[in-house]
Image (cartoon, rainbow, N blue to C red; front, side):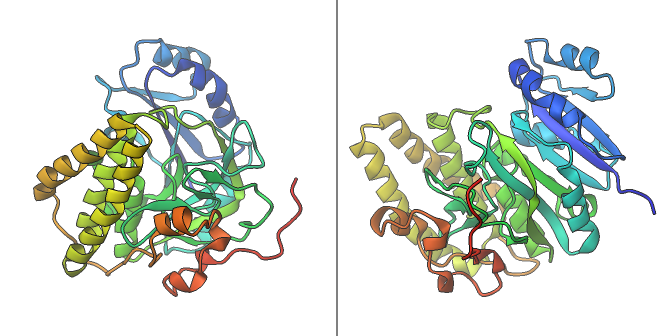
Length: 354
């Protein structure tokens, strides 16, 4: 029986120290049919030459300019020959056996379009990582959260998310995708530039009939903040703008007006919070995100084909977190998840902390 081929794509830009820290672990992956592609976004720090000299088995794709995450990955995909394609951030370290559980998941179920491993912090490997945790969801107005991370609260890994399950989105920091699913629904939406693009892609896959899976037997360690610092106003801008565009693009047209009205109210609270904390650059970023999303939405057609897939959590995650003090995924009322989301379940008999 032939072993499925896996292509790992890593986009990088002027991040030589991170590559030296993390790429050796990727090269050491124990998988018999693997290709590694590093897409260099016109780095000026010698990254491409260092990779070529240090790891000749790694294919280096030299982009002519900094195409950032979406376009950088999309322009590298044509070089990939794998049955499964992994997008991996340049600040992720992996153990040698991380790929096998992911590949097995896809091989056992043809309906899986994308999957992610358990994502833990690089410097604190008993704690879930911000970008992906144990798999992602969105609330009724598109606010993302993960099992293991609500806003800035990241849980300890005590085995509470050690059951494979369906999720709404897999983190772009470490996502495996079925090539045929990508060919059907398309690549990352380059108009997003970066942030929210993986949620949009997973939403499109589900509208096409695929499922998204969390695979806890595979785990990776993410440093985080390599592309944009967590406190960067541009990050706030991209998150708010792209979230609005994602909703407009994927919601059925009849659901958009009410969702948008509710979203404005929630974002007004976020804006007031930033102003109250004297984070004026972040407040300005939210306002600018709305203006640009309104301008850009004419190029985004609302969802008219495929399955109707609504946001899975029917409450407001910001209300749960800030007003009701629900700081963990387990504290969220499970009856408020759509009934098909088994990922809303959490193991009640958690394993002891490691």
